[in-house]
Length: 419
Ligand SMILES: [Zn+2]
Image (cartoon, rainbow, N blue to C red; front, side, top):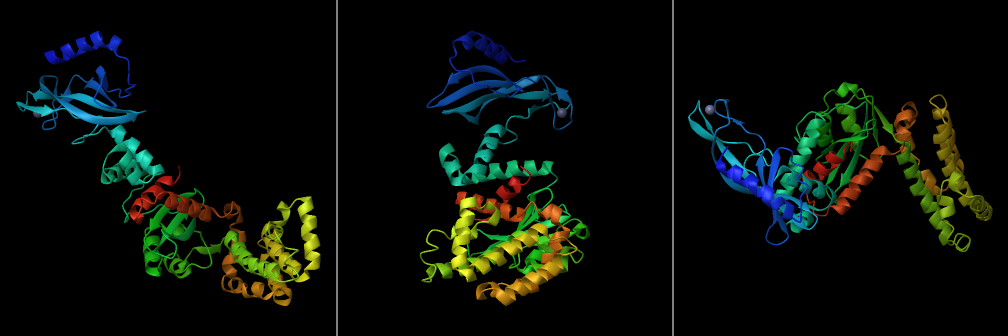
């Protein structure tokens, strides 16, 4: 051990009682030699590694002969208003075998790093919550550095789950796959999101939503034949891609999408009545009574809705048809779902308003996929999971206006997976 260290240790004993601030260092591999307030709002912590020896990177021989040591100042975490700096004594050991000195590894920072790993983690965690540029500004570092911290941190977390940021890497295969699309900005470039509907993990955010792009994405699944069902909405162009890439999988349309589709048509009916002279007063500030699920209406609301319905029988009919589809979802079984759906369709054709009749076409085009829902009911009934993920994705996007590209967004979404 060099004389310098002995002096440092003495300094600790002399100075420590007088130090007003004790930084909880929590770096077990280090010994604190002293702490002092630096310029501005900074704290300097003099440390040295506890380890008395190091392994020569050339020959693997251990050495405890200190050749010399140098001071290295590394930026450490932000503690309240204070910026902590580690003043490290990085030693060079002399290897007897090679007859050359070598530098000890810096366990807190890693090679060639001017910051501690935990500071980089602190940055990464903040960058998960807020735009990169804000974090960069606040901590007075470059946005590129924030990005790199985030990427390194996510890479490390994904690695633990056997995943990676590599966009060519194979993906774990879920039994029930969810597929959906989203755009960074509405109407602009769309990307495709894949989810495991059982584990509720986002598997990947793929570039684009065109058939070839989706096929390429699906081909990354490690074991495509293991996918039993794929849940999607009815508007997407995903069906041909899934049929081609996963021919054995059953395509399922989640009830959420079907109800949503019908609700859109029902809203048109409702709003048209609210604008007609028969309905304008009756429906004034009362439209919600017709939009709410029947079972969610209070006793008073139910009576009020019935009173209005009795005066507007055609609206009442449309409402009943809307509720009938919901009831079908709630009570149908694999055995009777098809028959009951046909009865409902017939009912709409005979008695439904135009807007509802026009909304029937998906029930023909997606009939098999809509009915398949009942086979996967136990898993899918926990309702609109992909949709939920997508909403969360959208929330992330709204919040992260610093994220202009899919790559950064993808990192955050993948990180959200399973956390
Ligand atoms: Zn050596």
